Amino acid sequence: MDLDPRVALLILFSCAFIFLISSHFSFQFFLLFLFLSLYLHQTSLKQGIRIVVLLIIPSLFIVVLNWFFVSKEVSFILLMLIRFWGLTWLFNWFLNLVSPMSLAKALWSLHIPYQIAWQISLTYRFIPTFQEESKRVYQAQISRGIPLDKGIMQKMKFLPSFVIPLLILTQEKAELFAEALFARNWNAKSPKTTLDPLSMTIFDWILAIVFLLMITVILIS
Amino acid sequence: MDSLRFENISFGYYPSRPVLNDISFEATTDDIIGILGPNGAGKSTLLQLTNGLLRPQSGQILFNSQEIKDQRTSDLANHITVSFQFSRQEFFKSTVFDEVFSTISRYILDKKGAHEATQQILETFGLHTVQRNHPYTLSGGEQRRLVLALRFSIPASFYMFDEPTANADYFAVELFRQYLISFHSLGKGFIIASHDIDFLLSVCDRILVLEAGKLTYHGRCEDFIRDYSHQKYSFIELPSIYSFIQLLETKKQSINILNGYLTNKTYNTRLAYLKQIIGGVG
Image (tube, rainbow over all chains, first blue to last red; front, side, top):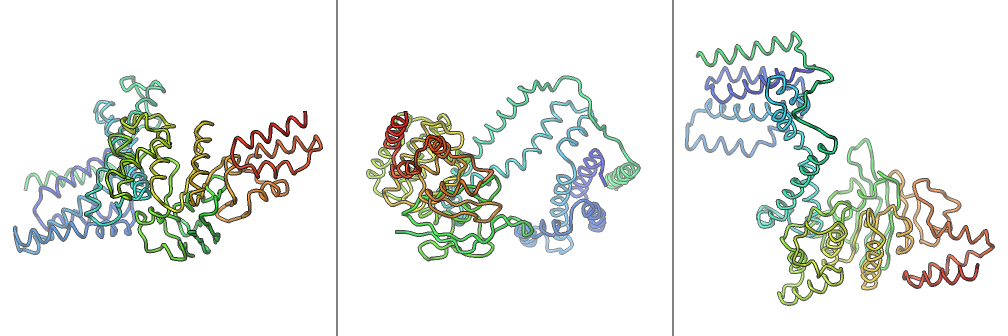
């Protein structure tokens, strides 16, 4: 099943909005359930669980802070946790679902200028490259004997040795990319067509209407 | 004399697709070992296993008959340092001098001594003229030399290089060869993974051939050239000395020329030797 990227954007923003605004526990629970079924359609249960496991420490932090400083209500703390996990799942789902190119297309079809749409999609296309680059810098530094793999204090002490090369290399990569685009005579302002234009299926329409209705209900109540 | 022993190493990034399969060999500080193999044979993976960036799935790696499994990479780097193919991502100081000094001062605690050692190493690698420059403003060849200077400023017993001669001009390769031989004479062991057969044959004592994760050849350099006529590797180019010998053989010259060539270790004596032979033929 391929969702239309515009519907995916709508779901992303409406869900994020509802998670942040609404304080009805049952409603959020329902939304989480609905969203999770969508999520599982795209990614695996294993990945979903892995994300919750990764979030254990921040979750504990949220629980402790709320318990001591905000409220001792269990439902309230649960609401906070649902909000946190929901938002994380949401963005993970979106990043897995929508490719940078189709995001650019979606933004472009929503009458956002092509340069801006292209920039946004590029930012998000370079996340994996950045990850790979940081892994390389890390490996190069520890095999040079810099103790970045020896606990949090050493890591903080030698943080510049990791951050500075990363910044410089990223900058260089961006310049290289720009040069490559110029070399191919790429022009953001020239008129453009797409090979396969976006089209909405019935399923896309149903999802869009459901999520629009939900936003309306929340705003009225 | 330090030793590094690989015992039945197997490794795969995914369980279904092993990259290395049952690799066993021993390296000592007496040897310079060259690893040959096609792309994707597992050469880089083998080097990464050696300094603990990756851990073997089965088998063990012993450094001085002590397993390295529990040691961190940054600790191991004091004994076994690996230099990667793309290695300009490690400069973080504002001058070349500080860059080398930051490494050396970890081993020489006396500040004045470290200063002198840094000066010395910069001169050895021909970087003293650019020592006040920013590392990222250097040319490609100078950056490569700086990486070598950083590696050689660690008093390790094994140095490993992944494609040290890739994209390097003749001058840089020749310099690297000289550093290698002079550091080897100080009792350091080397393992070099490369596609440059001429370079490997000119410096190495032993050659390993990795093919699809298996060790298919392990022997002395001289034997490798001799066996080469029987055992053709499609991924290795013909060593230029080998084609030279073939040329000589057609002129009824004996194979002893090859042995004579290999007994001369430095570049200049080899050149003199070859000139002498060519003069004899002509």
